[in-house]
Every structure is written in structure tokens, then in C-alpha cells.
Image (cartoon, rainbow, N blue to C red):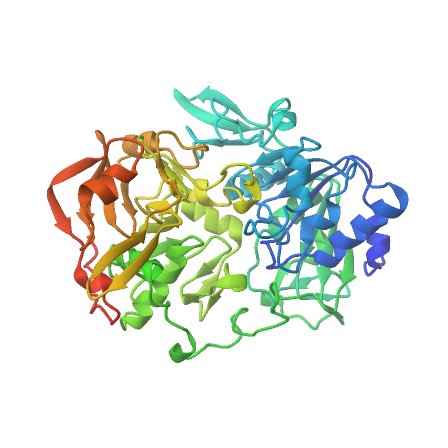
Length: 527
């Protein structure tokens, strides 16, 4: 069987109304050329049309790799079921895929990434769908939005609440994919795939299994094809029996704006002095305070944003290697990278497939999660997945719901208000201009994390901001620490839309956090 075909030939294999699953994480591992070929075919012929698209993690971004934007044409997509979607600042135009969702032209669903990977595994094994507690009392729960991003999606539910074994669960019935579009670095002539230049394996193997076991076709985009026998057995991540067709894009980017960096794929190890420390400012103050919650030997999950700077804090303090960083794309250990390389780690100890990493997260096997927030309400609920009239400012939930559902301890980091300006240094913080909008609100717009469920599960929850630290209690949010230079009544209690509790043993945050010099951080011993 001839497996090597052109991009146009591969695009012609996709039928109208097919269910297509794509392996990607924004600009990391995106089979961009293949998605572009599908978009070009639709413009020329009107086919394939009415597709259902499955994206466990976003395909493409707003900064150079278009990904799903190639497909964002009226009539091409009927519905999209995604862990995340391209996002960016309000200074950039709304992506077309978001416009189609916002204008209710296609059904849009935001499903936690781990659940989407679970769906592929269960489809592959012909199990009766995913039964999970991940997402209870969040927007995933049908008692809230049931993952629906618009009215068209709400009219076609994909999740239900069921009772089984004397307990309450969320059930996601099977969605069987017809086509998998995955990416690797190298294919041999038989179709064995290796990932030596990739920054992550993502979920390509599980997606290929789901399609192969249900009679569909698997298309692999690669950078090069080599002779049979060229790949070491141990290096093959997706075997030839799961791959139907191979397409080549010799110019495929490793990540957005990175053609190829061997440190991203773990082929070389970088010396410590290569990594830049976090710039001085309030972001660094918040990251420093979050770093104080890390214990020696902890396995710590990191999210995008301020929390991603915590490894650089430990590096600056001479504590590199004292904690093991674990991120949803699969990297374990090393130094997580920033910017367009987020999702990769330099000097990683290992790279796990994303579905396996999510099994680890969903089961709460790690010690601590460091994440960001957009809104927090009186119940301790956190919103990171939807905000206002410009939903593309956030990518959606990604792995956030999977990670937080059973984490032992979570630190949510962010600013107390949006748009405030500060002077920070010499051991204190001064607010020179208060923020334009409040982030501690009566009720969050979207519940991505449930404070109620966290209390039921005895999770330890801290909210770290530039001006104070709070903890979630049965009675509400309690301020436990306040920054030097901050007025409790005016700058904290007066800037929340709901009453905050104040600890009877309220403490000052360490002045070293607000001083532009190493803070001589010492990690606490593990319990």
C-alpha cells in the first residue's frame, strides 16, 4: 500500500460530515500544512463540509501558525469540541473560529483536555463513554453550561449527569472520530513515526488508536521520510499499523516562531546561565510568594501566566532541581520554557504523552498546582475560561479543570484588580493608580474551578495577589497576609465586591518579596 501521498490527496480523503481529531498544542506540534490543505480544498470545491472537529488542545495560535483558522470557513465546520482555542490580546482581531462560535454559526464546546483524551481512549476500547467526576459544579456540569459555548451547542448536549454506584458522575457519550490528523518528525516508508524534533508527544497515539479501532483513516504529517529500518524500535512512538497515510511538510515549525531548537526537543541540555530570571516588578512579587509554597521534592504543576515564572524564581535563588515541574503537554522536570515555547521544558527528565500526564493530574498524584485566575467570587469559584464580549482573550479551560479537580493544594495567582499601577521596591508596595475593574466579584462569569467542591474534597486553596494572600475557608475567603505599604480597608476590603474575612492572626507579607534582590528563599520540608 502506498502511504506517502500529497497534501491535496490527503485532503481529498476527508468526507463530508466526518469527525476529525487533530493532535496539536497551539503552535507546538501543529499539523498546519495538512489543515491548510483541507481549507484550500473547501474553498475550491465546497468539500469537506459539516465537519465535527475534536481538538484536545488548541491547534494553532494568533501569532503565525494558523491551525484551525484554515478551517474557519462557513459551511466547513458544523461543530467544534475543543479543550482550548487560539487566544491573544484585544489588540489583535478576533480569530475567525471564535467569530463563528460567537455568532452561533457553528456549535462550540469547551471540554477539559484530559476528558477529551479520555474520550479517545474509551472510544478506542469500545467502552460506553467517559464516566468522570472532573468538572462537577463547573461550567462542564450540565447543571451549568454543560461545556456549551453558544446556543447552537446548548441545543445539542454532549454531557449528562448520571448516578452510578451510589454516586454522582458526569457522563460523556462516545463521539467516534473518522479521521485523525497527527504530527511527528520522521516516518519510515512503512509509516512508523518518531518524534525526535518535537517538544511533546501530545495525544497522537491515542487519537490514532481511536480512529484505527473504528475503521477510520490516520494521516500523519512529518518533516521527512526515511528508509525502512532507519528508526530504532525504541524511538517509534506511533507504529506503522496505526498509520494509513503520510504527508510531508519539510518546513514544519517546531513551535510558533521556532524552526528548530534541540533544547525544546530534549536533544541537548542547556547550562543554567542560559535561562533569564524574571524581570523585576509586581509579576515577580506574586511569583515569589507562590514559590514560598513549594516544598523540597514536590511535584508541581504549572499553568500559563504569572505562575510560569516560579521555576525562574527557584533558579535565581539557587534552588534549581529542588522541585519537579510537570506540565500538561507532558514534560517532567527541567526548566519550563516561556512565551511561544510554553508547554515545553529544557533539560526535562522525561516527556510523557499528554493523556498519561492527564491521568496523573486527574488522580491527584502530584503535590501542588500553581495556576492563574481572571475572576474569583465569594464562593471561592475561579474563572479562567470566559470573560466579557471578547472570549478569545482566553483560550478556554485547557487542562485547568482536570488539574484542579483532585489536586491536593492549589495556588491561584493574579492581580487583585485589573489594570492597576504600582511602585514596588525597598520592601513595600505602593498603588499609584487603582485598577479599572474588579476581579474579586460577587459571581464569576464562568465557573472553571468550584470552591464548593474544593471544600468538600478538603483541598488547600490559596489566592496570591500583589497586595494580599487569601485562603478558602468554610465561611468564605479570608485574608491571611497583607503587603507592606497596603491599607487593608481601602486597598483590599474596599476593592472586592463581596465581604472578605480577615484572619485574627493577619500577617505582613515578607518585605524581601518587595525588594529587588535575591530573597534567600528556603523551601520548606515536605510533610
